[in-house]
Image 1 (tube, helix red, strand yellow):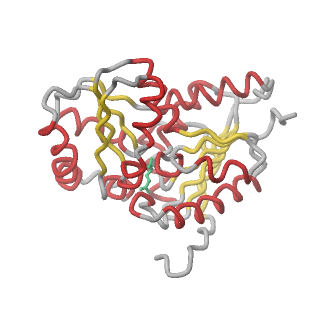
Image 2: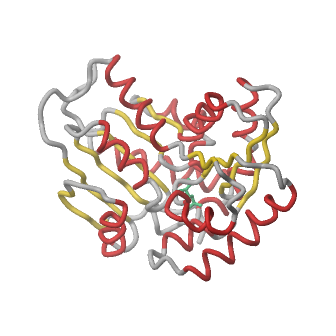
Length: 274
Ligand code: DGL
């Protein structure tokens, strides 16, 4: 039996997961949320599977220590490995990649691009999950090595953002001039949706899986009778990088009811992992 008064945990390699918190706050205003943004070893998307799993298990252990009733992995990169760490934890963990693939299945495009980190692109997991439901749909994965990191810096340096988009999304757009559906397959990317629209207006359908992931969490808690029936909601933001950047970005994203923004100890990396 889940404790309805326990907080919902949300985690990301960085602050991109704020885009999921925003949806959770809209949908579930009574809930308390604990966010862990592991920014110190970001970008995870350029790391190995062993490194990502090692860091992720420590983040989830931190959230377990906060007494969470459920965790939304608001990180596509980390979500691709969910089957490997879910068995180690007794609370339910939600993958944003599953939410994104479900969104595509509902929209039924004949072809779709997925803009993500390098790691997410390499796993091919979006293509696998989408094709389970839409076997005919063509899925084109495009990795971006640095976009999440540039956004994480928090200064929205337009020149750097546009240069990175041109060298990644530009390649995808040129190879598939009729492609119009694009999954924002990294939770940082909705924060630069305007840049994408301005540079590549061919993508008329930008798919942000954040709202679907929030719905998955709500539906599960409803089924388990573990939604809060009272309370006015709060948001505790924990970060392993710069709390000032996190506070400012939380304001820009429109997050509410922030009870604290705290610096917490970073996970211990694998030996030799910088
Ligand atoms: N927001 C994370 C994602 O959705 C970025 C991961 C990273 O490369 O650090 O994949």
